[in-house]
Image (cartoon, rainbow, N blue to C red; front, side, top):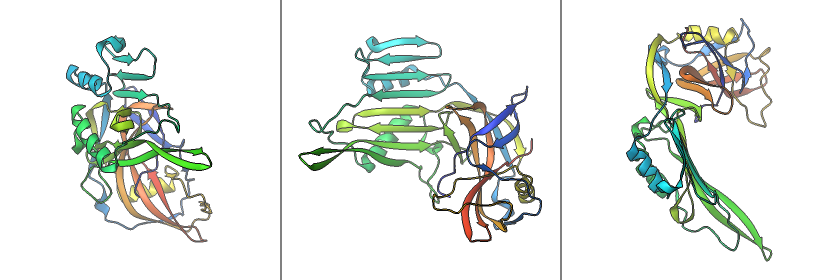
Length: 318
C-alpha cells in the first residue's frame, strides 16, 4: 500500500527498556482470535530480512553551526532568544508573530510565522512543487539530515518527499478569488531502509513556504538513535498464527466499504509485506524505543466480496 496506516502501539516497557508486548489498539480495529481463519501467504517466504533491530531513541543536540543556520533561515538574531538551557532554546519576536523552539531532548525544530492575510493583501510567489522540493533538499543537509535517510517513494529509489498547497478563497463583489498562501513539503525517516511511522517521535518533518518563498513553518522531529539488540524475524507461519491468535490489527477502510465481519470472513490473502518501525505518538503515548512491526497488504474475502486492507502484526518474538 502507498502509505502505512498509522497505528499507536501501546508499549509495556520492562526494566531493561525493551517491549514485552506490541498492542495495536488505539488506531485501527483489533482482529479477534479465530483459529480456523483461512490465511494464505501469496509471496516469497523471504519477504523479510532474517533479523531486525530494536533501536534506542536519544536526544539530538544541534551544533552551533546548525543553530546559526536556523536563526538565519528563520530571520532571528541573538536579541530574539528568550530562553536557553542545555536542553534547548526559544527565539521569539517582540510581537509574538514568529517563534523558533529547539528541543534537544526531543530532537525537534518548531518554527512558525503567523499569517494574517486578506483579499486586500494576497500572498505572492509561493514556490511551485519542484521549487519547494528542491529548497527542502538544500535545507535538510544543513540540518545534518542526509537525503539517503529519507523513506523512499513506492517502487522507486528516490526520497519520498511529497508536496501540497494550502489555499483560501475570498468572495469579493460576488467573485471568488482563490489564493495559495503556502506550499508544504513533508517527508519521513527510514531506518535500515524501512519506514519510520511516527508523529513527532523522531522521524518525520514538514516544511512550509509562503509569501515570496519565505519559510512559513518548520515542524521537524529527528532524534539520534543507537542499535540495542537484534531479533530473528517471524516466519510466515508464525505471522499467520499471530493473526489467528488475535495479535493483529485491521487498518482503516474506505467510507463506502461494507466493513469486515471477522467472525464470518472466508479468506485472507497476503500479497505484500514489509517491515516498519514505530515509537509512538507524541500527542498520546510514546516510547524511547524504536520497535519493528510487519505491515501486510491483504485482500479479505468477506463472503460478500473482496476488500483490500492493511493488516499490522508483530514481526519479532521477544
